[in-house]
Structure formats: structure tokens, C-alpha cells
Image 1 (cartoon, one colour):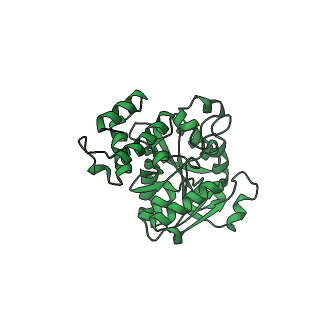
Image 2 (cartoon, rainbow, N blue to C red; image 1 turned 135 degrees about the vertical axis):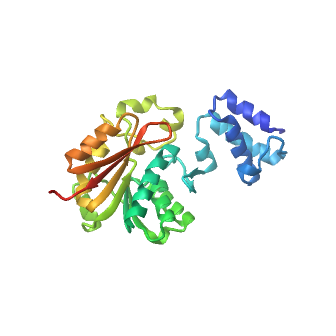
Image 3 (cartoon, rainbow, N blue to C red; image 1 turned 90 degrees about the horizontal axis):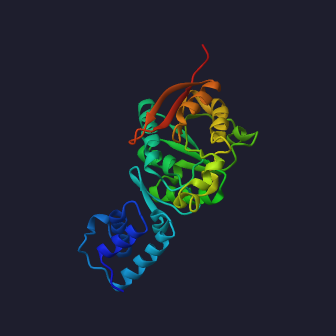
Length: 285
């Protein structure tokens, strides 16, 4: 089987892959077990490497995301294992990590909670950035927690993170942490309205876990519950940071305000979408 760089690009283009040249480079790099930077359009592809790439192309033609074919994805400053048990890390989410990092650095925070940890890309990135930080991550999915544990070991932060299986809809959720308080909470909860799930791209609806996507009828179920929990889980002056879906940030801010949290900022991502909602628990005056 003979394959060239241009052959791979054409096959991916035929399947309407958004970035065929980039994905071709990534496939070749994976088949050769080299860095993407070492791949050129003129590189030779052996028979065995071509077989591996052809299998990847077949999976990609069925809309399987490339990160789930390769089994890992770069996010923020790090590389994370991922599969169909967890939401694929997305560049949009990096703004949440960046804003949390600013607060952690400014206030020299020592502990953090993530609600809905998934692959761990948010929580573990922050732990990797700040050696003095310890964290707790919860998820309802044991398979997601298993992936987060592998990523914690991969980043060398496993001794500073505790991962728990829990459902934030449980009435006694806060008691699971023995009423422990946190300086900062981060969350990228499910926020797609249930009726919109079937309209999502095949890469998302067929390969990301439904639990990580479905935000209930309105799309705001998780936000409402977490905002309700936050005053109990946060230290005085502690912060809560949410990722928001398109056109959701203002409503999320109002939900937080109704639960006694002060709106600090709404931060746009690189596409100009209001992506990160920052609120704070403040003492009543």
C-alpha cells in the first residue's frame, strides 16, 4: 500500500475534514511515532505505516474525532489521554483555565474543586501549573475518573489530587467532603439543551458521552445546581468559574446572582464568545 502526504490530505478532504493538512501530519506522526514538527509533505511512508494510517482514515471517515483515534490530545500546555468515556478537551475551555490560573496566582490559593472532572484537563492543568495547589475532582462517571487518574499520573500530580465518584444532584452532596471549603471551584458542566443533542455534529453526539453534553431541557440544569451548592462549598471570598455555551453567559450570571454570588467578570474566548463566567462568594454587608 503506497500513501503520500498529498494522498492522505485528499482522502481527508473528501470526507470534509475541517483541517485535512493538519490531521494528515498528525496521522503520519502517530504512525511513525515522531513529533508533528518532524513531518513534512515529502516524508516517506512505509508499508506498515501506511496500513496504520489507512485504519485511522477509515475511523475518521466515520466521524470519529482524531484525538479519540490517537488516544490523546494537546490542551493548554499539556497532553491528555482521552477516549469516548470523556469529553474531548477543546480550545474553547482554555480560557477557563487561564482565568483560574490568574486568580490562583494572585491570591496564592492552595486548594481547588472541579465539578465534572472528565479527562481532568482543567483541574490537572492547574495542578501542573502550581506545585503548591491541591485539588479534588468529582464526576458521576467512574470511567471518566479512571481516565482522569491516568492523566494525573501522566502529569505527575497524582499525589495532589483526590478523585471521587459523586452526583451533585444528591441532597447530601456537600457532606461527602465533610463540609470542606474550597478557595476556587471550576466547572465545564453539561450545557446543551436536551432537544439540541441530535442536532450536534456526529463527532460530538456519537463520540462524546451524553452525560457530559446534556444540560436538561433548558441547558441550565447543572448551572442551577452548582450555583446552589457553591455558597456551601466555597470559602468566604472564594471564586466559582463556569464555562458557558454560546449565548448562555448572561443567564448563568443571573443564576449565580440569585444564589448570592457576586458577578466579577464574563470573559470572551478567542472567537469573541462569552465563554467564562467568574463569580465570587462575598460576606453579606
